[in-house]
Image (cartoon, rainbow, N blue to C red; front, side, top):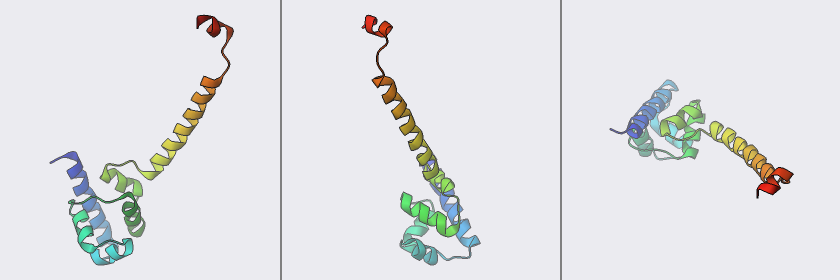
Length: 111
């Protein structure tokens, strides 16, 4: 069994426990998030994965931490992705400024 399979099984169990704790049927949760109940059952059994959008919907309805859901899916969590994108933009701007700076006399003689 692969690491991905184990993550999906763990995630499915996590979602199922949260759903039961919320006293919600599979059909009700499926309706809330806009999927067929049979698909949601496959997710809970670790047999299917879900899209980022569906993961966010499930997390919202069940009041789960979306980062944990994304970890179970083997994907980067939206909160981490947002921070990473900001840091990448900052680094890109710094690199552009570095590359566009005027050459110093010492650099000009080396070229």
